[in-house]
Length: 177
Image 1: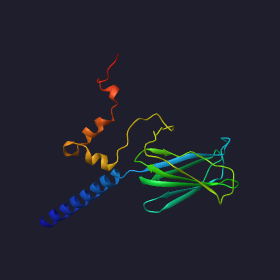
Image 2: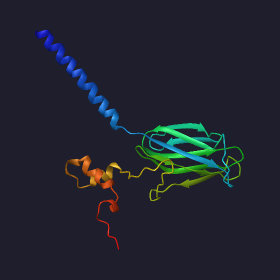
Image 3: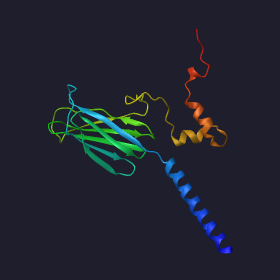
């Protein structure tokens, strides 16, 4: 009987470890970075080489644009990135300050200028730009951990944090007139 009790405790502990591990994995989020590469006239460029580089870890991924000039990097860890785009007959384009946010696609559309690949054009995305989601009709805000840490929320209650997602006009507090 004593041995059976030890086996049950061991199984219970293993099950608990597995459940806690699954919860931790579920809380790590990913993002995606996508866009279209076009020439100065707006015609898409297929076969352009697009490299996505995490500027904190210096890790990168590379792919070619599709026939419709599209590139999509899925399952991207959140963080700051740089997008480099190269195509024959065009100057290399570098887009800096691209922020990959949890569960939100970051769109980086690149227009290449005619010239040699040895020349480059650098564009810096700014944090103050309004991010328009052209992929779906979802609405929402993205919070950085620093912002969440500075909020006066009791015990960092997630439900209280989510109430900040409701647009002001929908809370009944908007003035009509």
